[in-house]
Amino acid sequence: MSARIEQKQRTRRALLDAALRQLGADKSFANLSLREVAREAGIAPTSFYRHFNDMEELGLALVDEGGVALRQLMRQARKRIDQNGSAIQTSLD
Image (cartoon, rainbow, N blue to C red; front, side, top):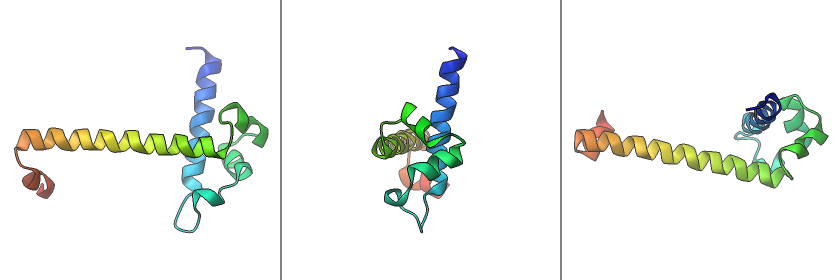
């Protein structure tokens, strides 16, 4: 993989992480600012558009990552249940 592609992936990840850090009980995704996300990621706001078309696309990427993480957790839980033979016992362990 070229250094340019790796840098682009790191910057995209930095944008996703910056958005996640800003989300919380007092701030919803609808209240996120592209400028704030870009600033926290360490890039110029105009550079944001090299990675996402708009904030909606950033939000969809966050949802997609959350879905992937949830599926991985569910697979791990099923494996533990298969090994232990009981969903109840596995949840107690």
